[in-house]
Picture (cartoon, rainbow over the protein chains, first blue to last red):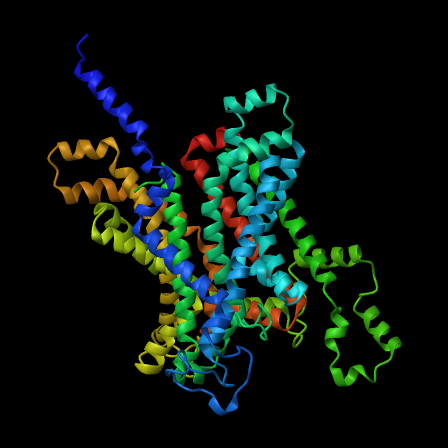
Length: 304
Length: 321
């Protein structure tokens, strides 16, 4: 029997499939969409560079971020000191690198931990409903009745200043948003057929909500983690700038900027606060680009 | 409608009560009590335990926690906010001085950010996908990424120190009495605050405008042969901006919270810089009163938003939560 044109087409496809020339497009739709977003890729590159630079800070800079050197104080940027030196002769570039470690750790760490708390509560409460959900909802409403910065300042005045306290405070103020997000996703997923099927199989509540439902709610959560990382880094910088964040002996981006409260330094020694302010802005902007790219590539309703 | 408002009010007051109790007990847990803050370090070495106890009794600190909370709450409801520990000034007096300054700053910033945000958002929506739209979106993201105090510092350096156009900070200069004399002081802080707030308003105005432009009455207006600017302004703009303006109006609490650091940068004598000062000095009565005032403002605003959205959209009040 003579081959029709359709048969020939199928033969071609079959041949190509056997040669495995189809497998080039193995990347998922989300990844390729993210990579097509120029701003997101740009953000990811700079984000990675800044993180690597602060991780490998000792290799990049010969100076000690804490060592006071009074012979070389308040020097303008030069080949030896890229961002100049501060009022006690410490190399500002080195301090920015080491400060990045703490600031990024606080930002990313608090965002991830508050997501863990929020999701753990939100998934279970959203799926189960009942009194657990009512209580969790009311508690999160209490935290959301404060402007964020006011609540953080209030908690700082209760607990006192330390790195650990600050992260605990950030988690306490940040879990509510995450909880509400996870809960809302769970409420809509709960009525889907596959969940009812799982329930009729007799699977335990924990398995259903954490193993089967949670993965379907993960993309908005990822977006939210990036956005709250940006927010926590900004809040840490603001608090440390006021002298109410991380204790001043630990270099963080906010603590380096703290000197700019002095109008003489603001006016005469721009390198002590300008570059670090730019680094914070660029880093947070990159995190926001990444978050936006993630949202566009994972959420089909958010295009345009 | 009445039942809906009643429901909201039933949540409102217990919420305020619970929060005030939590804040009161939180500050109770913090180290030291009012007496230990009143005594200077020099005095502390000479004072005896009996004298301390006598002082505690005089201030009613030896009563149980619940009793003290009750006394505090009842006097608060009657309008007696107590006294600041630093300087012993009546808290109500501090509030009267600082709240108007913050309101003034926030209102001006809100005004600028609304106008700027709405017009940029609408432009962005009309030129969707163009270079203007993309650069406005990126600018908006930069606006939320730059730390507000850093932006404020750069503005001080540029406009106050280098160009000497505007004062570095403060609200009232001596001998400056008329409204016109006070304008230079508010320009920098309010504009910095407004620019930081613009991004959100812009994003919201853009999506609302895009929403409206896709509706059928816009197509109808176009098909009647109406010029494009008339379609956009008379039909699109007007419909799109009503919800935006309502929403922006109620971002006031957010703005009041957001102005805290800017007030500090510009030495603006408002409630935000007072709050920072009281946190630094561990002035617990003041910390507590100011933070509860913020909570009151936020809760009231969200109550009003709920009622307004219910008025606009009947689905909200008929449907369950």
